[in-house]
Picture 1 (tube, rainbow, N blue to C red):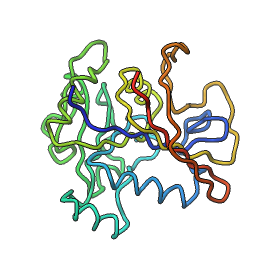
Picture 2: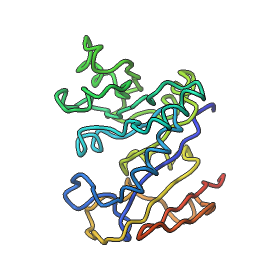
Picture 3: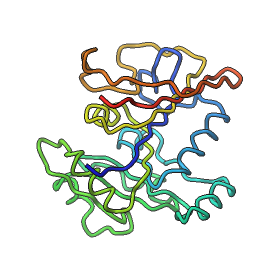
Length: 227
């Protein structure tokens, strides 16, 4: 199928957690990692993330660096990538700062989720509706729609459930993982890939493309090998 080139960009603790056990907003990555994140977001046509990630932060990663915005314009991209929220239920607080950011906003949801936002074009410029099946989304249908709408490069910023859904379908092409110098621990603290997990024989195999150490953080770049 035709789909966007999809890259996961995440920071995690040394023991593989992307947030603490309370799933609170993560502030453990460095300013260097924040610039790294912004750089990869600036390459993308769209950024996608789950509603849980949005609830934790209240805002999304917009492009602030004038040079990155200029580079986007040179590539004939709009100044800001589309920000896509995934929420099967459509339950998102309309008062969070996200809705006041000067960015294009899309929503991926189900028919029942779409009803909550009907008649509010100032909130989401576009709503993509997936076949409803117990609030599950049809990612093949969604990714085909995204490609048809001109989304050629997609950056995934979490959370673990969203990443797991895409890994299960072999829809991830690359991963950029930043290892940060702390240990969060806990069986309920979220990880980069959640869900039910995979047997080893069904695991996605990766090729390590680069490793860079900057101060106390390690930046890993992987390519997902074809299964």
